[in-house]
Image 1 (cartoon, rainbow, N blue to C red):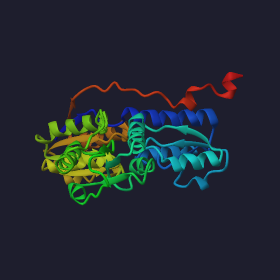
Image 2 (tube, rainbow, N blue to C red):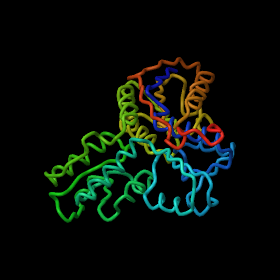
Image 3 (cartoon, one colour):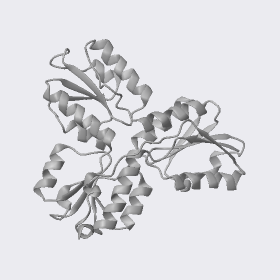
Length: 314
């Protein structure tokens, strides 16, 4: 067996920042620390933090008044922020800066009187948060068919934004349909689909043609992981989206395949290596690392954690 290990893969700068933020919050404030939704969309990451005493909630009423609350990498709506303030929660905002950029754009365009077309997946935490910035002014589209059904008050005051974890090709097709139907629509100055999403998709595209099968390490609720799996499937190879090695059935392979392995932006590298080791042990697989580029993006910790604690000040 031959393994093509795609790179970049796994944690992006936003995920690293969110996870580091939660680790530091535990160290500084003790547990429980509460997190609104999953810190990132990965079962392993969430379970490891639960064992440390972190409590993940979907409703702020589940949090005692005055407790420490961390916003996940996906961001939250203004309504959630207002409710957190009313409950006097001590908030740590670990929203990925690239998601914050989309929030800012949505807010600015809506205030200027534009209708905002948000390209994304209904119900995803990031999309819910962005739409909460101006629900009366934002229209969600998930497909080219949605564009054809779109009804807007003024086609000359129209802007599009995108979820950061979309398929680049899918976003391009939908944007093309928007521009064809609404020639005066404008977009953000810089692309909203994040650098890490693009890099992982490009790496998969480069390798899938020489692969017989693909394993995408990532959880089912991870948007960027699902997009990677869809890309592999579109390349004509048998593809499995797996949480980790326990999900691998060795009967999928006869031991002579070329297997592409990649990982979504919230999948831990040790889990990826556990999958690689399983195939090495079972099929004497030879590993080839293929790194498209080196990622050097780093995000600062939330300002709430950059300030010294009361104990540190003393």
